[in-house]
Length: 147
Figure 1 (cartoon, one colour):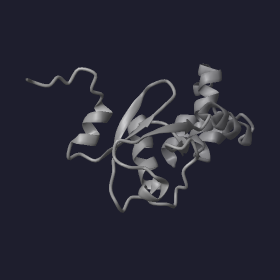
Figure 2: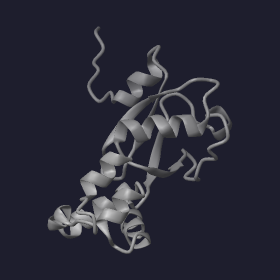
Figure 3: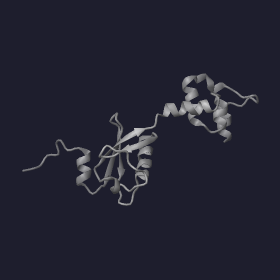
Figure 4: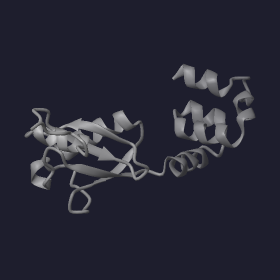
């Protein structure tokens, strides 16, 4: 008799296959596959997940529901192939707002100092801010391009 793959999840397939994968998931359900290697640190896995998920990760939560130590190897933190880790994401909007405040909520200054999060916040708050200029007539785009 044949066997059916009905009910088999990608996680099950990763455990059974030659690919050694770890799954990193947001609470929204969005996830990505990252490579599991014997000599890989949690920090290296986090960096791969950040790139694939296109967000800043504050912490990864392991299978025991504890924040993982970024300096430790995957196996040291009980992260084995097929494991699903949960993301605690940085509140990017709050970080962006903080950067904007550090620049006096001045979009040209934020661009000049390379505080792109501040620029992002100010543009979300006031899209017309893109036309703001400094005393020499330079816009945020001019300042960012000069960096």
